[in-house]
Image: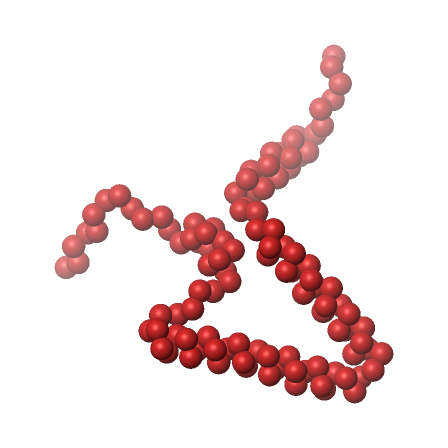
Length: 112
């Protein structure tokens, strides 16, 4: 008899993991670096706010102002061009990964 290769559940789990990892697209390196930097900045900001609660109000106002600035630029550009700006999700994940169905090869059926 040979050595045991694992239980049925282990084998299924390993195979499902391989299938799942193949189906999920890997994020670009620039996005991973940016996410890491934002994560570290968030942790540092949380520590600062815990140590000095008065800074929480100032940081909240600053973050709100930055968010409103970017939203205003996005809406302004969309109003001028007539097209929505490119969203980060569209840059990171291709259409297929966001759940959009691929175009069908059959012609559309006529509506009654």
